[in-house]
Image (cartoon, rainbow, N blue to C red; front, top):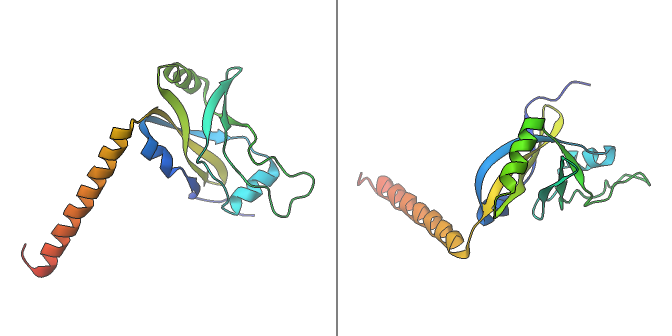
Length: 159
């Protein structure tokens, strides 16, 4: 069988970018069982409630929902089990030190296959206040309206 090339995105956590200020990101490998990989290859996963946490000097991904493989038997996996993340030791030290700061958490942003291997993009994030979320939405809406106005002006030949 030929080796896969490129990246194939399985799931994105759009809510994380809305709820948090993303400060830094890392790419981590993820330890999966066979039925989890097959379920991911079908494009089924949800990162919405996911977060990463330290246990015994290792980083684990929790709350990520990978549904059971439809054709699996008694060997199927638990949908929301704790999954180990694979990072270099110096990256782990950096993540643990910076996540200890007040208001910081580690959230998954994207789950994807890269050259046939499952990867997850995790981010050090700080929670936004309600007024920050409103400001972000307002800026996005203003940018959209400005783009629309410029597009209409060019279409009418007023440029």
